[in-house]
Length: 186
Image (cartoon, rainbow, N blue to C red):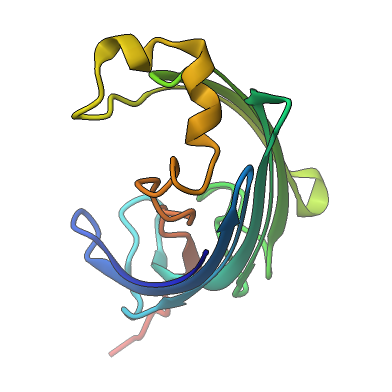
């Protein structure tokens, strides 16, 4: 299955906006996606970094996610992401870098359709890295609780038909670019 998406992301707390454009290819046990992100709002005073301004950084990502047909409970994921700007906070406001990139590798285990456990390691420029662990509960309205607790039902979720309600794979966090505020004397 091929798909395309367009998103408008808006951060209410900071008044930032960005557009996202993407494409996806899904088949049984495999999902591939590519996304581009374009900042729409200009520079604003940063509430987190003193004497700095911030705006959404532009960038892109590629993602591959797959599951073993013989053991569909086990999955793996790879993501490469690249953002552009002189001081981009891909790893947070205190770890700003010029044109940062990162590679993420992760594994997941879904013992039953209701529960997914995951671990990811992300590595970037200049030795930046972080590790994330996740636990996700996903209740599908209309499916019985019995079917959502059945380990044999996980394989159906990895089929194209079973994943039709899955969300688009994209970075929902707006990555920010920073710059020193210019002081004008009068």
